Length: 287
Image (cartoon, rainbow, N blue to C red; front, side):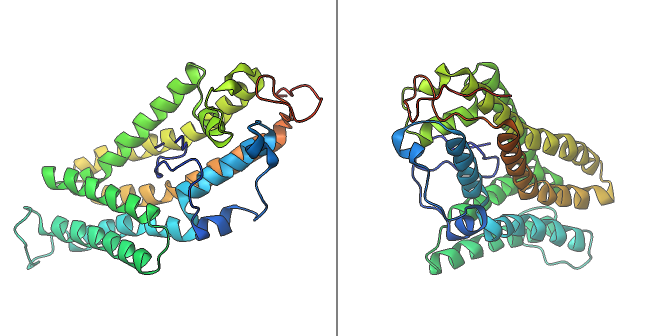
């Protein structure tokens, strides 16, 4: 959201079926227990679903460090532009008409590059900072083309709108994105999970929880973008703050809501018709 089948990604990139997990992510989002046997057996269970949700969101967020690294370029860009905007005597580089925008974009991209170098020197996972670098680079292209600082936030707004639309379509056609994720985790290449209504219904509900953050971001940030386009002084700072505040915090909230839904529903999918048998009990259904 996105982008193998990795679901949460408005901020994450897809990985292999069994990707290397960032140590920060593992520490912050996993309990250290070994994966349930259901993963190996190719059977979808409540534990399979919860484990998949936790793992994929942990991959997308990158732990506490990944969250901070994702926010730094945006925060630096916004603060730099607000501080330097209309400042007389500011050194110009001749790349853009607005020297404050030049400095803001340069420092934002520079910070992202520095974070990549630090990760490489530490030989740690660079996925999250690469995502951040790509994001600030695309934002720079939009802003440089128009010469307007607020256009740096437009790609994120467009991305969330498109991502939300794709997730909703996946639900409507009964191929919910979370179900595809579960199928990838259990190596169900024939998508047999779709033959069980309980799995499809649960996956649809969990996918709706991924739609909500995207819709909220668009609903809040697009009006701020329109206001900022009319040269309202406070709007750009509010837009930058909204982008940071509605980034990983909303993803964490989505994770919490998913775990709550799983716990509330008590969905014992330990035996799923068409997906294999673990016990002699019939497949569970959502309450």
